[in-house]
Image 1 (cartoon, rainbow, N blue to C red):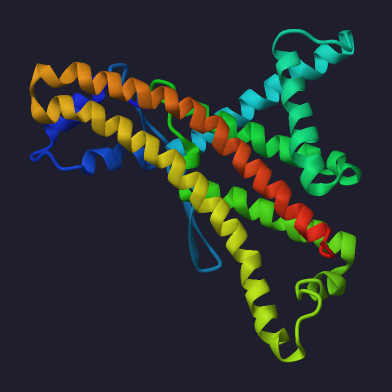
Image 2 (image 1 turned 180 degrees about the vertical axis):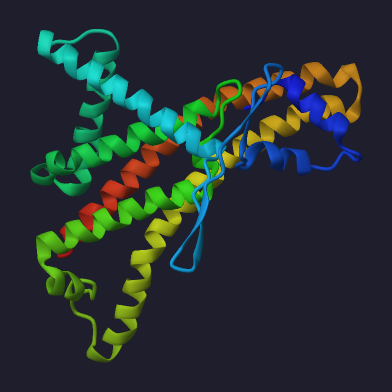
Length: 281
């Protein structure tokens, strides 16, 4: 998020004290605002392919997605190198091991089954660490929360959706998986209706993953910006201590939310994979 000075400058430039400036700070843009050091304009990449106009411009959220990927690549390679030197790593490597073990034993094993937990652990671990890193980057000065972009959360949910369907079809076969969508014991005349309902249910799961992560990561930032903005909107020093204290409280709460949302996305993805594999339950 931007600094308090940037918020003040934005409000001073606005002719009215509307809430539009909050939207500007939480939405994606083609510039990186690092005042007072300056503004970085990101390159615009647009071209026409087979009559279609494609926009592959680099945006603020794309940059922070790359930063998150680079951080995880360095962190995981470092952790792997620690294991080559010692089977009992220390420091950050030990923390990574604890988290991976927790994902395996407390998320994957109960929802997918111990026989399949290890197979899906790389996917679940990647999803957890990537979402957590993106969430935390948004809490740094001049940072941006890529997971507050519905396109990002939708893409993550799409990856989970493909993994869920692929896991179900690999275990039960394509036809077996489709047949398994209909619960056992359903009267014949209800089969067409239940098939449509279950088919829609396949798509509501990734939709829920998309909206849950997007809404939760956006809401906290809006509250923090609104509380800080009260200082400049009301233009009185008496509101400053209250605004700052409440903003600090929400900020600390956002640290917890960042962890919880990564956990929930991973848990639900694991649960949906387990439901696709074990259709008989």
